[in-house]
Image (cartoon, rainbow, N blue to C red; front, top):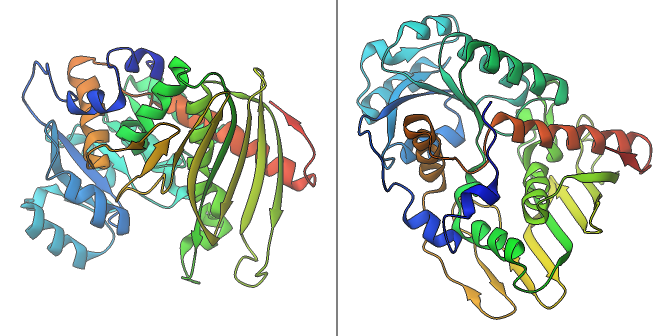
Length: 359
């Protein structure tokens, strides 16, 4: 895995907006890379598929689904030929498809490891949706295989290309309001669908795995550090609906510099913010994590960046790296592993009733 960090990427632009605006510049090769989506659920249908109609460096060249009805719909909408349609029985034959360069895994969390490894062994680069895996052990195995077969592995961290988030990272890096002291980050919603796989532990469900990872990410890329210790507690108000998975978890991450991140995730409450408190000011996003729009302000001004297609920017950013070795925005598999290490520690602290867990 090639390791890239935000400080290297952001050094080429004054603000995150400049980075986003010049994103597709200086590309030497024009051939679009072919992408295959594995799993045609809501995120593929409403976000990734449409984004691939806007991408400059890649295009949809294949789908993998277990639902024949979806084959017809997608084939017609995206002008796919019969040879571009795969199911879970013939998935491995995708290795022979020269039109597909990248496989994007958009499956339930429990299936990420298996299909990531199979895609890598089929000779394709892989983007795996977050959370990267079920735990750090799985993540390490996925990265090991990536190195073995010499194919790149990425995580679907779309906010790494979103102008508001890039601007906050730039503010933190430059210490425009002094040193960052406290991070408050939360993401949650009311999971009303009682039959959703995200309410099943065997599928890797739960609020922390689904949306809590955004708060972890925000704390990490705002602070520019990895936490050294974690305290976490779980709360349940609906024991029937959330009998199998976490409903609400709050946790605190402590950093070596003294920064503190207070985070919350929930499947019963609407939460969507990132608030950074500095020595001489603040910066906050609310809503912070949605792919249909981000809004925010600082001590001095309201943030006003044009809305972008986050998924298109993310996929083009990865392709820019693959085609021309232009650094991506820290969305490699190693970044996913770091999040999984933290998630493992959060669950460990929950089991020990909030005991401090050192990393």
